[in-house]
Length: 110
Image (cartoon, rainbow, N blue to C red; front, top):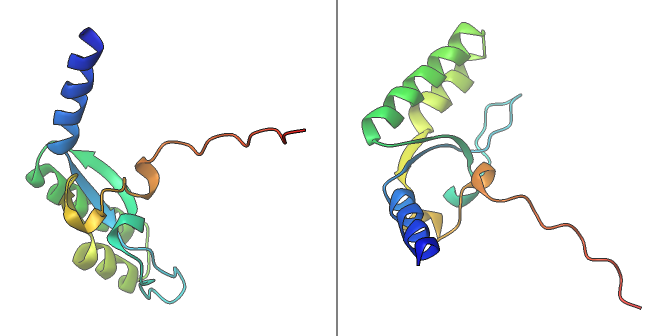
């Protein structure tokens, strides 16, 4: 019974989370690579939309301070998205860097 309660609690927390997602892009050209949102890079998980939005601004400013090309700074600032963890655009998938590690390959059967 305790395990079920913990799993429900985790599920409830996941539903209330906000992901900061940045589209994949070519660092040389700054062009966005057309991929579904579920394949974008996750830059953080937040408890509120306000925290996520502040983090997006901060990330863009960090890029600016580190002298990233302006097209990259603009991309992060304008195309980065804060989305709820149950957003239908994620297609039920966990964003790129939030997923579990892939399973180890099974030894070949003999």
